[in-house]
Amino acid sequence: MGEEVTKMGEIGPLPPKLQRPAHFVLVHGISGGSWCWYKIRCLMENSGYRVSCIDLRGAGIDPADADSVHSFDDYNKPLMDFMSSLPDNEKVILVGHSAGGLSVTQATHRFSGKIRLAVYLAATMLKLGFWTDQDIKDGVPDLSSFGDVYELGFGLGPDQPPTSAVLKKEFQRKISFQLSPQEVLVISPSLIMFEAITLNISCFNTFSHPRIYIYIYIYINRLPID
Image 1 (cartoon, helix red, strand yellow):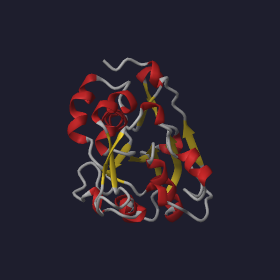
Image 2 (cartoon, one colour; image 1 turned 120 degrees about the vertical axis):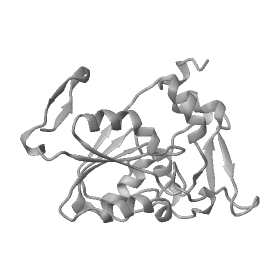
Image 3 (cartoon, helix red, strand yellow; image 1 turned 90 degrees about the horizontal axis):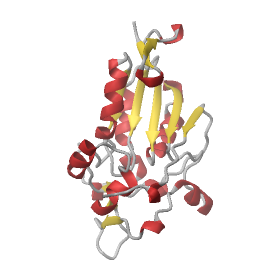
C-alpha cells in the first residue's frame, strides 16, 4: 500500500483516491537539472510515490549545448516529449521550481488532460508568459543588489544578445544554496552549467488549469556565506 510523508517525517497511508501511487513530475529552474531534486525524490519514492525528474534542453545531463538553444520550445522540448509519451489515461502532478514554472505553464497549455495539478514551488507563475514589461517585473527576480551575478555566453557572436547564462560561482551559495547542506556545496560546482536564455520569449495564449503556489521566504542578505 502506498504511503505519504507527513509532519516531522512520519509515514501515513495514502487517501483512498490515491491508492494508485501519484506520479510527480519535477522540473528544475535556471542553472539546475534533475539532480536538484535528489533529496526530495528519495523521500517521495521511499514513501510510495512515482517521481520523474526532467533535464531541460542543455541542462543537467542533457547533451545539448546551451548556446545552441534559441527558442523556448526547444528548451522545453524534453518536458513536452515526456508528457507526450505518457498514456492518455494518466494524470501527473507537475511541479516546477523557479523558472521551471514557465515550463509547467507551457505543459498545462498543451497537455491539460494529462495534468492533475500544477504546483509552482517558489516559481514563475504567469498565466500567459512574458507579454508586457509588468510580466517581466513580476516574473524575473531582481538580483541587482548583488551586482553582476551572471556569466554570459554569446553563441551567436560577441556583438549579439547573450544566448546562455550561469550564476557566477561566488554568488551560488548566497543566492541559490544558502540553506543547502555542505554536500550540495561540494557537488554543485560540477553540476551547475550554462543554461539557455529563452525564458523571456515564452508567451502563451490562454490558461485554465488548477494551480498551487508554494511561497518560500528567505532573508538572503542576512544569511552568512562563509
